[in-house]
Length: 311
Length: 199
Image 1 (tube, each protein chain N blue to C red):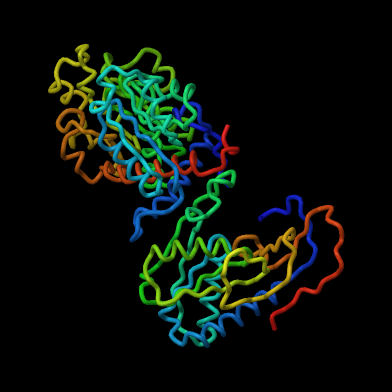
Image 2 (spheres, one colour):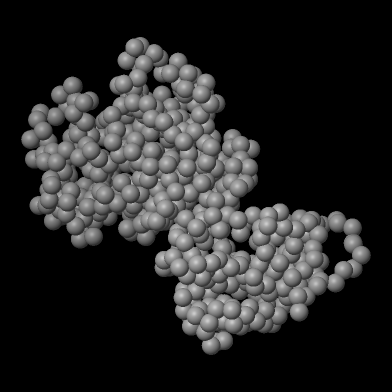
């Protein structure tokens, strides 16, 4: 039996090591369903999931939708750009109105940190955080860990470099929590303007990408978030590429079997050069496939058991 | 059913020798019914159906048949009680080694009881293709069916009470080959009944 006693998935920080392993092991077991001739199992028949996306998304949204369909849950996706949110409806009103239609789960992405936690306090559905502001993106960290474990056979003892916009990145935060919980060591690399204060207390920070790359088992590149760049954090994208972009030349410092990861969407020629993104080190598309398996695991663990199973 | 939590052993139904002989006999029956065992697929239902299927495949070869393909079925995602049981069962994954279209599939499980596991297994199997036929082999048939399902090959048939548990223990999963009849701790000793062997 899997011990996963949570009602919501709001972030990686509140999870125990065992919780994380329960999700990863379940995802490992479920991945095979995607290779079947009929990619559909009846596990969540009759469950309704609402995907409520207040921010743009391709991978995460598609991945949740595929996971929901494969497990036979009924799902509907609300992209707020085409919804009544544009008419001024608040997050809570939108959620309450959706709840009146009796969904079992709401998957939410929002630009404000803490939005899923707010919904969890006010709604009776299970809430899954699909990215909240610069706070957490738990399913991304889980799929990254699944990919790492699949390629390296373990997480414990690995050295993982996270390079890029640490200030705005929820992916970096979730990964930092997850990897340290599972016994990997993390090093962070970013220009000084893109390192939030206090982060150095959680993992070593360097401003030299060659130092970050050297000896790392995996390098996670973060996207330069141009939509959050109004503050002039980097002089220019060209300069950023020159100093912090991952290029084939820089990969000479890396371990031969180092893995390159990117949560997408990539800015080719900014944080990552095409020859690296498409090179032999890249596991970027494996990450996408594993994303579906991880989201299936989260749906299964939150919706599959009896209500008494959850706290 | 790994531990004895709240149950005590009432009777040993099969020791290692009997368990072995039952499987060998089932292998002979399968070879007799399906001369072309090379095109048969043995599919074990997780957990203990899988090692049983692997053993049966070897015994089928020993009995003069061709080695059948062996697969494993995890029926968790097809259970009818998935949303009422707690906590969630662990997902171990399904492995079907070849196309089952046009072949004979022999499903294998350790204990046949309500038939609900077999119902789930049939639904799952049919999502993998259209076999010519599906048959069912079980080590122990303990009765109390809740669905119109019966086994084609049976190692041992017995009469049980619903509050008893039949526990199959295998070398591969439990470190020993034994079949036990368990009853609730503190259950009143019932009048002695003899387990009824099929042959």
